Image 1 (cartoon, rainbow, N blue to C red):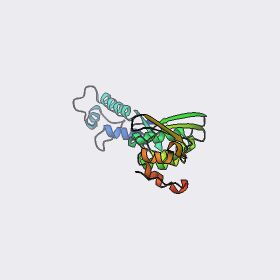
Image 2: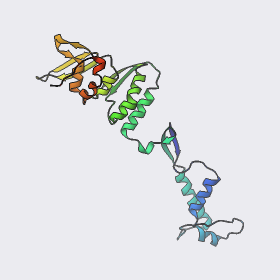
Image 3: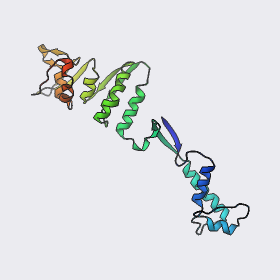
Image 4: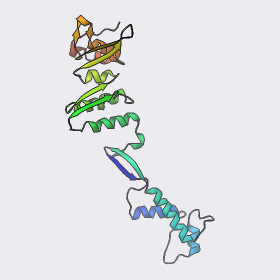
Length: 217
């Protein structure tokens, strides 16, 4: 949940107001409004010092400053009831963003550039992959990535690999992950293993499923 909350106040009630007063007065001091004098009030106000104005005006000012600070509006993000705003990182922000996108029921196309940025491998595996699986039920997804987890574990329909040959010319290979064409030397699974970060380790876990052998020369 994305919410706003007070900086230092859960609820405005008698307990909160009593706490404000305690922060203004010296330790254990109390005010009996029916008998207290101006001098007595001045003596129990914390850090009265050389403040200008009457004791009552100083008391009002100090209370006002505390309440103004306490009731400042600050952003908050709660997950399962816990405020995680101060602990958020770029990776957490991305994960939350993909959580939200996965709830979008509208049809259309998502174009996502490097969804793995700032997200840990465990975070991708435990959360983000499931988000993309859900998103793909309603929308086509075009993704640019260097992370093999998205390519291998999402079983994408079409992998487009852009590389350069020995003469620095752009080389484009495409097809399903298991696609092989010996005539034009295309093996998508092998290309993923050789060109994506940690690709071979991810693909080893999928060998049995695709009944293929990937070797790196």
